Length: 225
Image (cartoon, rainbow, N blue to C red; front, side):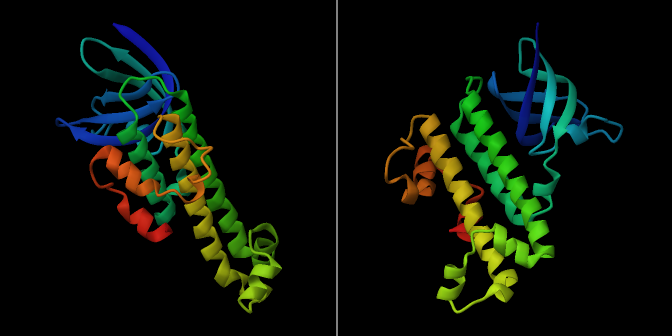
């Protein structure tokens, strides 16, 4: 029997049996793992809150003749800011779907793990910045990508920032998503991120071609593109 201590991000989960769950977790040193979490669906379970989707948690596992089994877990970050925003949680779920679909089971890939970890951190930071911007529109104007030239082109002024800012933020999310996809495809050998075509490359079509199926998170593309 082998005991493992690692951190990981919960990218997928499904019910198993009467009270268990199967977790799919991306880790820095062991790649993508499928983990059985026994009894976590019971009302009395203290571990269930630590293994929600998108949670970054410290995990203790043991590996017998079958799959890894969760013995202890402690949440490090639940990414609560992301989960409060419908668009951003959809974006995060999409990234998790890509990691799950493109990364093989049990193959170490620390770069893929840190790509997701840093992308979630960036999305959470955008949520916090938007909260501040909503309260102080002029500061949002000074700190955002909206400049005088852009506003003037459309006959707008600083007073219009509260109306224009959400469109700029949505564009920023689209850039975050595209950058993540290009980096992940490059890391896994499907693309070269240094290619000059990367900026306008249709990652959506390529990913679905690799997976040979439609992405469950397809609506994210509809909203952000």
